[in-house]
Image 1: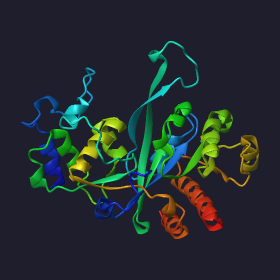
Image 2: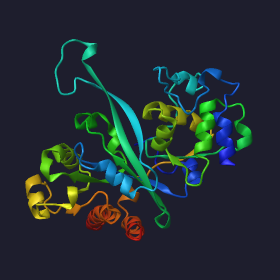
Image 3: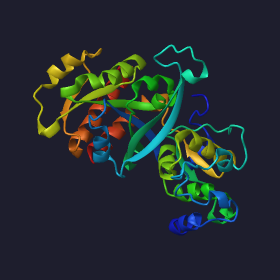
Length: 199
Length: 141
């Protein structure tokens, strides 16, 4: 990110609060937007981006038509933490994970991620976990308890996810409960503080 | 003040009558405002590169905005608030996709009509004290 180094005079003039990006990931229908809505101070907004990726996934020999173009949409919200001097932007990642690799802007500057899983469809969240593990972005896992029920323990879910770092926190949460959403973000910050201490 | 500005921005301006609907840049008929109209005819990439999580605050005073294109005035009115708005939020509210919005805002930054605050970078995001402040504040919400 050589284009801005944080020393831009324009930045100093603008800045009471610094933006911080946190990604909310997980498969389709796992509760990303619900969680964003729960904790955001504004109604969640939707932003779109058009991504072009030559030959993602397939080797097509037809020429220019083989370019894969897709529009990805992200729902996001914000949470101002005035005392800390930051405003958290919570971006629900789009479902088309195979396009994430073409989209450097998605990860750039992200503090960390919360990966939501639905234990009835655990595989839907594998691509997000693989992606963050391969890119080295710190994350925590939140198992959304649909209908207020969760038949599995956090340990069982962690084992089923085959997390590369076994110390990755796995929380049981209800995406509709503000305290649960907050606790998941606190767990992420504990991970970040722990790794910053160790460094 | 900001409300008055916003209302003004919504009335069709004499500058650019073909793009007089800031609320609906992407119209139902599939017709959308051309990017060169949004950038006042410039086609070269702006010097200022912005990301979706950069926050934007308006720099120009209201009196200086009269002759600006309608979309520009709408953007300036929108981020005329303490703390500003993120690029993604402006894009969502203007119903413009991220890349064109980033280019438009880059143009405004080049012309010093806006200030921008990039997201926290490397050293800050691994600063324990900063992370602790965020954690403490978050725990109190």
